[in-house]
Length: 516
Image 1 (cartoon, rainbow, N blue to C red):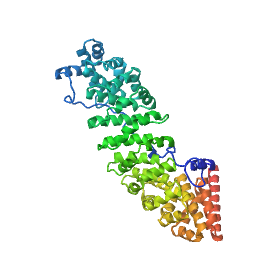
Image 2 (cartoon, helix red, strand yellow):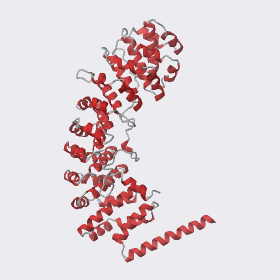
Image 3 (tube, one colour):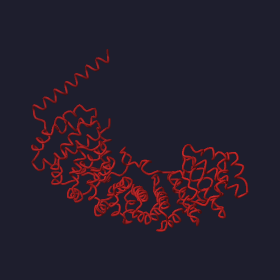
Image 4 (cartoon, rainbow, N blue to C red):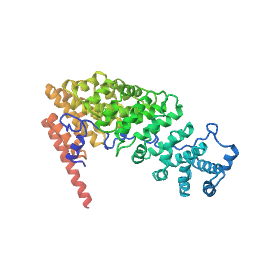
């Protein structure tokens, strides 16, 4: 059961009047909210190359490829040591085919043969583009595996060779190198920074030109997004500033896959401290990000909304920049989106805007955010409702009297009181805190009695009274304070005392039964 201190610490993670102003908004800290996690199926970290279209690239004759596919691992090890270029090519093709299987490629078996350093050497055979291509493909698929498998490529000095191939005059070789480097970057922050230290960014960015084929540009954008990914540590700020102009231009592309990965890159870069958010917003892409939040493709809306949600966790000025870019114009429809995950993210974004000054809260009201927020609170999926509860909490504690009244007029009390029947003690505490704040506003307006009657008409008093038997001591105390302060007539006090005695008697009987 959480203590009062634990609850106070939780509340410090939110910007509210009367709370700790050192933590102004909810950063994406680890508080168990699933919407703050980018799932693997939303943006794949690594990709294995299993496609094979011999017409796309320059390959040896068909019968030679068939020969290569028939080689065993033992024969590959023997042939690959040959100094004959055509034999080396045959061996490299055989390995590539093994690792390009749809299911269960023998990555570990290939690694155990010890041929990876030789494969890396093939990257430097500039007189044999086909051999370079096959070698890059092999390394791509090995690096698509586990961290241990990726480490084998790195320790064999594969990064250096792949970076060299970024300048290859053969576009299919260059693209395969980009793919392999994307897999290495996707392994985690250590290899991401290793790539950056090997100066991978300039040659990557040089490939972002209008003449680059769309399929190739997809791979480049995906690799750039992996270079933006991960915290602990964050990507170096110098690297971020280097990539931002290209990423901003990619946000203007028409291809949905490119847009999706560019948005994911922005979401990673904004998931940090205010100074990092500032570097990103200064790139001037906020209006385009708002436009993408309105896209029909879920794969684009999700990361665009996440990036904007990160931005409004920043300073009031950064939030105002998001508002000026038009974020409030798209939030109403996102709160009503057919996907609950989008509703949840939109509510989280809204809650952080509501954590700002009264002027920003007023803009939320003016732009019609209260009706869809109340709808979500009433009928949304539970995880989205929880985020809506926090938005209401920030409205009540940050808004002025007129704004709190406007929120009550919008019908927030009924769904808020209905949620007091849930099992989540933390959310109940937030609701009770919001109700208390609404009562404080009513006191200032001399409308306490009217609010009490409204709560009773909505069956709210009954729900609050039931919380006096809640297993969470903090919930019990918060409910008791509300009842004592606003609903405690003499008759109600007797009923409450009688109910308390009945519970006490049941506990005694329970203890007695256990003893026997």
